[in-house]
Image 1 (cartoon, rainbow, N blue to C red):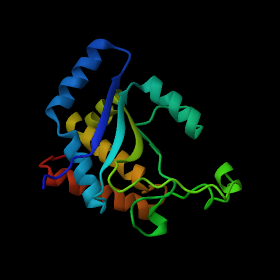
Image 2: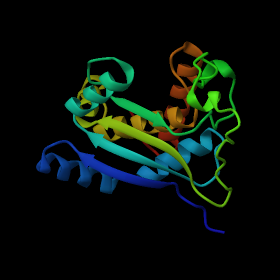
Image 3: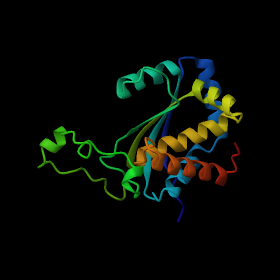
Length: 192
């Protein structure tokens, strides 16, 4: 049986065709599917999945960061999980909370009679979207004195971990995420 790679819809939109072409060329040489697959496996997720990856510019990610997180500044990576609850099995202090767990009454909670959608096991589970700022990748790679390839793969792994349920707003979640990211990149022969 052949191992199944995650399905990734890739979009590159930096607002500059020349820059888009450079990023596309960089991504052609990378094993993006492999970093996603290895990240999922390291977190114990083996079911077929899909996700969307957008590589963009600082202005676009700043707008998204402002709209969704009320932070009017660019950031390196944003994740938009489509799951109702974390997919990964981990201690609660390492995971993001659902709206219900935060005490926010959602429309779905109000309509408790509505059944939860369950993806049939033979279909892909759509994890959500990961958005990465290319200019921030370049700045952070230069500041850390490692390659932009390493930085990009590190951020992809980080975004995927958020999609499946990990949260880095406390030390427990942060340290687990960093450990998984570093392990995945080391397994792939990527050196900082």
